[in-house]
Amino acid sequence: MKTEISIEFFPPQTPEGVEKLRVTRQKLAELKPEFFSVTYGAGGSTRERTFAVVKEIAAEGFDAAPHLSCIGSSRESIREILAEYKEAGIKRIVALRGDLPSGMAETGEFRYANELVEFIRAETGDHFSLEVAAYPEWHPQAKSPKDDLDAFVRKVKAGANSAITQYFYNADAYFHFVDEARALGVEVPIIPGIMPIVGFTKLARFSDACGADIPRWMRKKFESFGDDSDSIRAFGLDVVTELCERLLQGGAPGLHFYCMNQAGLTTEICKRLGSK
Ligand code: FAD
Image (cartoon, rainbow, N blue to C red; front, top):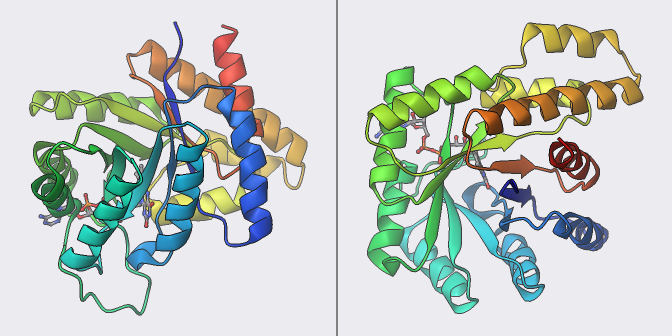
């Protein structure tokens, strides 16, 4: 059976980056993703760049899903963005709270992602299919796992069609989260977010910040490779492919790849999954 996948990009900062992303996209198009999504910088810092990439993806004939974060934004600015996306024929949005850049005062009119979902539904009805974020290992600012789960349920009940998780390397955390959400009446698909592993040091730093756990056995093994990038790549490919296999066998409805604007690892993982 074909695995449904989606792939996430960030909007490049330079013309060279935009050109490189076009090439990456051409390669990843061969995987026939359900959609490509494009991240959105905190406080609207990438508004134009996100929109530009989204328009290119749509012009190439793919379903393009802009991410949209609400923290630090006014209702009016979100209304304008929704109108732009509607006009451009966009049908899907990844709706998030986002994080304020340090030093930026919180002057916005939204506090949490469920308020953004409610607002989008009130303004645009069912025009957009809405994805929200989920955290199988809990969001780092959550008061407790129970509070975080309740916040997730609120977002879904506000009108989300589907959820994409933060990345994780422990399949049991995902299965547990899905079971708990189902017990609270959540019926929408919960798609695991998959982070292919390019290098370890950066991944470890980023994981600490976003609350994703790298299990000790993986950490130790990566550390033992030092600067040997071939070994890191080979081991990373093995563990991430095995993770995807377990998730799909356990009923995950698809996979969302955080490809970091690179085609190689995502393509290789999908090739391995397809050849099983
Ligand atoms: P929320 O669902 O609002 O939750 C944020 C925190 O508030 C959680 O700890 C939650 O438990 C708590 N909370 C929620 N409601 C309440 C309440 N009523 N009272 C008290 N606490 C509450 N960031 C970007 O800047 N740009 C992106 O493009 C982007 N894309 C992402 C895509 C995915 C799939 C994921 C998983 C994350 C992405 N992020 C992105 C990161 C995300 O913005 C951060 O994790 C952010 O801190 C939380 O956003 P959220 O939408 O999950 O927030």
